[in-house]
Length: 371
Image (cartoon, rainbow, N blue to C red):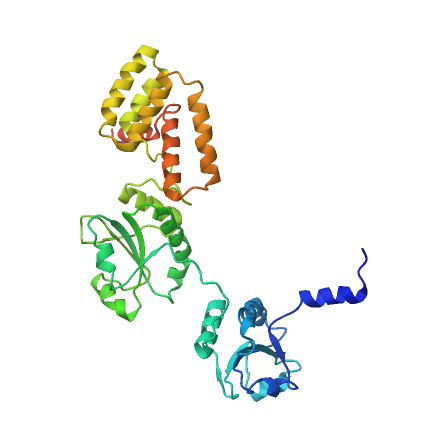
């Protein structure tokens, strides 16, 4: 189907539509100072910083389009048609952002140039809320002087705490990795990943108490103690996960979920290795040994026992079929984290009957190295 020239032009025009109001010397005074406040960007087409700001500024205008009768988001080409306006408002660099009150009085905008900062500024000036959806709450537990002792000094919890400042570049660089680690350890309620804004005036006492003199300062508060240990390891996701697994006795995997060793029990691994190659009469004896151990081994010990019972009863192809079923569930990741952890541990235990236990291999290597 061939589009008419007018329809094609209309489509192009719609695609290029912008909610940023373009101001010129001709229309400026009829809009600014006429009862509506607004944020005005004075830009130059050749300016690199202006080009970088442009997409964000478009998003800002979109975020307040529902309130266009209450606030203006506009721009002036101060190196082109709007040059006289640039001179009038003493624009000496690009981009320059100015806030104009409803009566036309104005002030410079010196805040951040990210979307949240710009939107928050407009809201603070007008009371008009943007349509920007708030970000999800962080997985990192935020502590302050109110709740710090309750969490960090909890005798039942291991707690890693970063003391940071909002303006700290190293803190900003570390934050994405640290947030991933917090998400990874969230299912382990007794292994906590937390943060304190140590530059906040109300938290200065905490910073002083724990000797925070630079940012970020990272300390580990082990359960059963009120004295923290300095964290001096690396600041990557891998570094943090390895450290917490060692300190908390957990088996968390980088990126989320559990490692292949989660749920494995050394005594049961040894029985499983013998069981899978044993004759039928020997399996019965090993099953009795496993039953005795399982009484005090918790849920995972009982799962080893269940696998042995299936094999003793001659369930055809059980290991292969069950292994594929569990791996399929894990691949979909549609269950709650706690349920996925349970499935992963069961899958790990199933592999104990088909492969040597890695924990024992690692212990053998260490013992050999010490000799």
